[in-house]
Amino acid sequence: MGLKRLSFLTNQKEYEIRIDMENSVGSSFYIQYNDFRISDDMSGYRLTDLGHFSGTADAFILSCPSNMDYGNCTCQATCEDPEISTGCQTTCGDGEMCICREGFLKKGDQCVPPEECSCFIEGQGVVPSGQTHVNGDCTIRCQCHSNILTCDNNYRCSSDATCEERDGVRQCYCNDGYTGDGQNCDVIATDCADIYNAGITDGGVYTIKPTDWPGSPFEVYCNMADGGGWTVFQRRVNGSQDFYLGWDMYKDGFGSPNHELWLGNDKLYYMTNNKNYKLRIDMVDRDGSPYYATYGHFRISNENDGYKLVGLSDFSGTADQDSLAWHINKAFSTHDRDNDGWDAYNCAERHRGAWWFGQGYTYTNSNCRTSEIYCNDWSLGGDTCGDCSLSDLNGDYHSSTRGTDIHWESIPGYNCNIAYTEMKIKPV
Image (cartoon, rainbow, N blue to C red):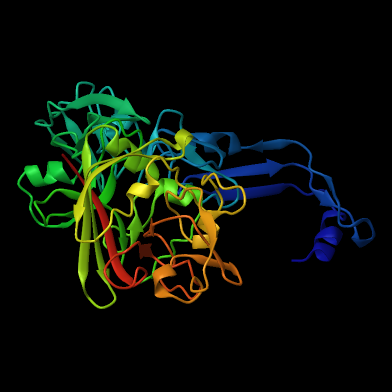
């Protein structure tokens, strides 16, 4: 009609107004006022009077379906999501609507008591869709999928598991030292020797957890050659992994068990201090010739002691010289943690690696900057060179700077001509 016409109309006589409405479920109600008038354009068509109210609007609340009341729109709990954990599924429209009464859940267009939801469990309530509920003594496990509840009355914990609640979830959990789903728990191997002794003889990546290791189980490569059961903690293949890294990286480990890696000094400490281990180092030079060094005993200390090489003995092998023995009782050094005891130089920086470097020395020799015999020594200018190690298998794979190569003193031929290394341990 338009406000202008409505203004002229309601100001020429006294008018009543009646508003008839019908809700979404078909219930009708009305509102009526006995004096309705609006002002003119100059005053903004203001609603100036309504008079007395009458009607059936108060009965609208009674027109909502069963178990609903008319009120402000809110997120409503449903049978599928009784705790509204996946977000609000309610469409509010104008802000008011028929909503479920407290204690009722939306099920389609209806509001029902929890026990009428398909995934209701007596004494527990409604299991949300996609979730699982296990009873107090872990003898029944029920799962709700697409509003269908299925229960396994044969759910039982392994003898190596405990029925308990963790982070709000009750179920069977494998005890420390075991892995599995709680119904079936297998012993977690402490090293590759455990795996080999269990009859698994294929080399590859396996999960272990050393004795007293405070962290989670972790993956290692198990080398099953040479008697089997070797846990690999270092490997160089092609230089794709950067080994010129800091203390924390060498502490935690880096790389891939299947490829180039350093397992981690923390892990190596826990392993070598809970069993007696021997060490085997395999090397291949760039001409394809293999060499190895073995030690009947190998152990390092903890981080507070600098992961010192405290146990190393009984050398044998084809690498010609016991080039790791010089490093006994030397702490581990990285470019950002200099433990070599040589104030004048940072050996990890000079050799561009990380190793059990020790206080080195400088010397003068006219050949030290050019001869392959001195390839692992770095130049100080002129005929003066320096050295901190007889071996460093974590050096620069693609070295273009003298003294930074991967090297092992006095292997046949060229000391720095190393293309492949693998360091691994096995219980004695």
